[in-house]
Length: 253
Image 1: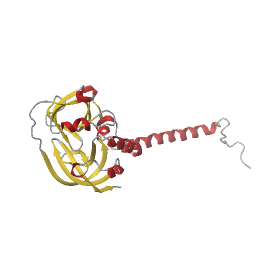
Image 2: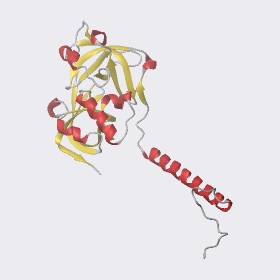
Image 3: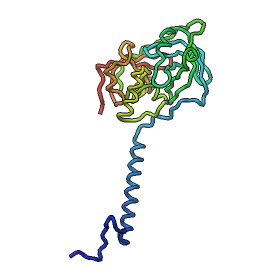
Image 4: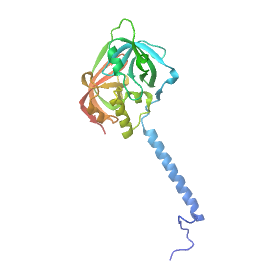
């Protein structure tokens, strides 16, 4: 027969005095274990660095030469305290939109760009104001803009959208991260390849299709995954551009 004096837990009855200490220890260990597990997950993630809309910088206005890669860029010829001459800025519109319709008529011309800077480490982008307030032609001689070929590379890393990566959002993991990035890329926001190893000192490369075409549709299946890819790299100012070969895309373990 069972011992009638032995404490026994019944959910709808008060906890026996003899079991309260044991249950308290179990609860403390369980909660501490969950907290430790969460901490381990957090510290185990790569730190993308601080990134944000830099409203604290105020509106940024610079002048430069508009180029298409096919994604719009501004090769800065007249900068300011935040954006130096010689810098190459990626351009984007509000939300998950591009500025292609405004940039194409100005390709190869001097233009004034005005908007809010997004910045994450060495990667930045300017979100232009609407209409001609954001991008408009200016008079002046157009200087020669050099493009430096850097050969063919095989890189490992991740394809992201340049706007969220620059600071519009904190880069994440999983399906939600992939879906968000693909929505930006479908809106023709400049895509960026985050390399696991620096390429000529740069971790971030604007990525296009071969021969300077838009990112191939098949590459969207590889967005937000750790992949390897081959392609030709070129330098425009201080920005590297990877012209990827979609036939070499491969998901890495």
